Length: 575
Image (cartoon, rainbow, N blue to C red):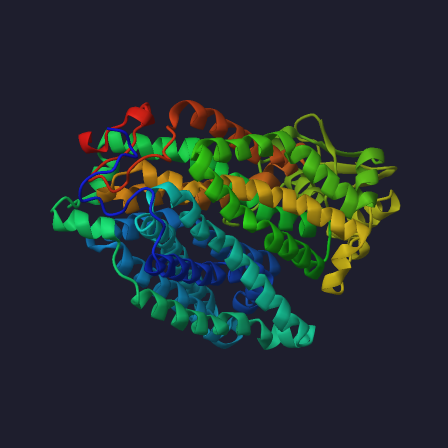
């Protein structure tokens, strides 16, 4: 019996169109998930202000450490949220589990808007903020698997990629919504007022989104596949041990991580988050302009999620996801190079013409990977390389004899990185030899939305749209692919963990990994090897070890596709 053959008692037919009630379910699930991602991304967009408000009693270095730790915490705990809520989803149902996740997320975000700053309650503000951020990460860990599973189990089999692709749009739409709200509030008041109290408004607005989301989800019915399975007594009594304690299931989760999600995660984070970081921190584009450029690319490129989800129902999940990974691996160096030449040509010229050398004892140099901000790099070599990397300088290292005091040679000047005036001396020396001044570095400047149609901003938007197309290729069909890999009885648990390890760790650690690699090598591009290698490896592993799943009948009891199965001949009743 083929995977797409009809069966008596099946919950849904492969070929019938979705009913109006089911379409409402898809819309309701997607809207609720958009609001949840909106909550999650607010912290990242306002991290600098939040750091000043809640860690203000510390010196600048310690304040930055805590701000980064709070940001990283939301990513690092996501897999644990996947385990907790995935288990609940497979035990008690999809609907009530992701109702709980949105209450936790929305409540935590609203409390941030009310939370007194460190000026009022001291270190308690920092502790409470980090705790709220951890709750947000746990909630997101449970949200995605629930929403994707819920939607997939309501969708007609032959249109599962299309309908689950609406869930895939939610992270981008949530980011887009957070940027719009922040830009709207910023434009309505002075910079001083926004820093004083205006930053709270986007957090407080979330209570309205929470109310709408809870109301929507209260109207939903339980997944028909879950109801049928539970009525027949086939639901799992121990989802965690069944999903990860049995090798036949654990193997699928591992291969799903390495052959699908890891590459998707680095392409997704490179195309949206790192692109924004690259514009602001590396190319010195002002924050408003960079946010506007990214917002335009998100608004235009987001349609790709639906397009590639629909296309995956026709040609399969693998060609699109793995194709996106492969194209990203082949194009990232020229794409980011073109972005740099367009946004900051003076910086590109300086890279080509100015020679900067760090003379040091190599034993003093560390690999500056610091995702939580808890590590301190204080040797002369580390201070020099960290400062140069943050200044977007291309440099080389000249190894010296043990015990040699580290120095930085720029033109005819030699600087001591341990000197108290090193930061000022470095800025002056770089400006003298042709590096653009940090205060006026980028030639791209947007004051109004229509400014994006000027030549240079428009070129950057086209570049960002290309990156967004790759994001939509790897992410649009992903929910359907993961849902189809695992049986109903452990689906929520099984798909959530690899997804959140991939996106929370492989993706969430991408900015810190790229910075460390750039600092180690002395190039603003070297760190791109991180997403390139992972995306390329995913394309290879996925090609050989992940089966095509678009024709799998996910309603067939405990059916699943395991690596090595031939999908055309797969009998779902035989599992």
